[in-house]
Amino acid sequence: MQRTIALLILLIPGFIAALGIKWMRDTVFGILHTPIPSLVVQFLLGFICFIAGLGFIGGFILHRDRKRNKVQARFQKKKRFDSE
Image (cartoon, rainbow, N blue to C red; front, side, top):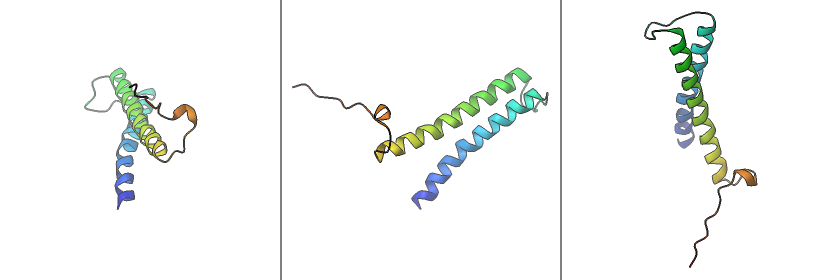
């Protein structure tokens, strides 16, 4: 059940990133979608969607790998030392 939920959590940002790529590609070919007023705005929205989706997926994978200690030393969290 947990794996299914994790897959669903990753599918939504994946679809958002794919939509961003589609909007950027459509801008290159001059195809404007109806709710968006101009090609420049469409490209910027596509870029933002792509970066947000990719960032969420990357952060999710990094967080999971940090919990399992499967990352290199430079990606591990710094340990805080309490001074007494």
